[in-house]
Length: 140
Image (cartoon, rainbow, N blue to C red):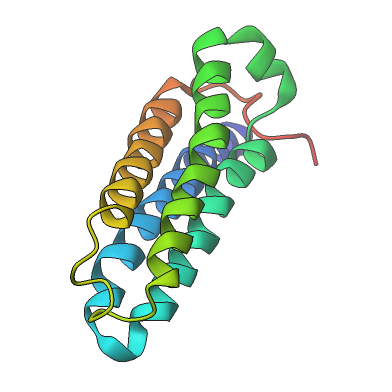
């Protein structure tokens, strides 16, 4: 019985960790830059969480499961492709330097919004594709 509970807790970690990272990438990039003193911190945090999202999948989901589930494999690859593009959008926003510098920007904000929300959507779809089996996490 305790093994079943342990497997369920591993499944919740495999689902929750990448989704949390993607959500924090969106939240950090939307809320923190609204304050002048946290502009740079917000986009740096967004970069860190965007990079952490596909890494969380590679650490949590076993290779055997990725080979078995084509849908999950494609979604995880999608997060690995979209995450660097989200990082690029954050870097473009960082290059503007401040909230006032970004006021007239018409290019970097849509790039960041599109790719960061795409990362969030792909991550949520991938976490839903993870089955409730005991082979979810890598063997420790």
